[in-house]
Image (cartoon, rainbow, N blue to C red; front, side, top):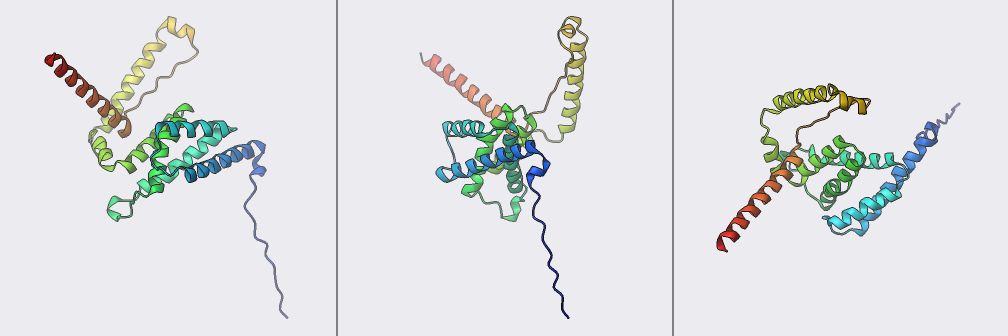
Length: 218
């Protein structure tokens, strides 16, 4: 005789099993994802203007019922960026398609500012650096090479200075009476921040030379 055994496959566990709060967070992230898809359909230009980026940021903030949903979508954007940025350039697989360009530019203009607004500096920096690495590989290499082999030494110096400033603040009786505790944080500029600062300085120098030339002609 032949017997047939039916095996029921287990489906994915429902998010509700983790509680109402988890379900609300997941629901908020899902709504934001649908909004992102709708925005990508209606935006034909992969390089949105500053006003377009501000509109999308405001829309996502308004739509989100839980700020952690914004964090999830920002982390999802970072996950996509890392998947692109980690492809070796020598493999020939790095193609700046319209989708890739839009993802990177959204990271710079939409999700990095949102992460900063949420007070998540590390997430903001990672979004910016990975997007910068994808869109401007040559500039990223130049900015990264400026540190050379001195990164560890710079980190050690920053740590010493940070510790001394914190000790100085805590030893001030007037300052200490006004607060419960103080923590001083510091960081070394990331390649994207360093490159932007270099551009600002170059613009300032160019403006100063133009002003000198204009004054001399007068």
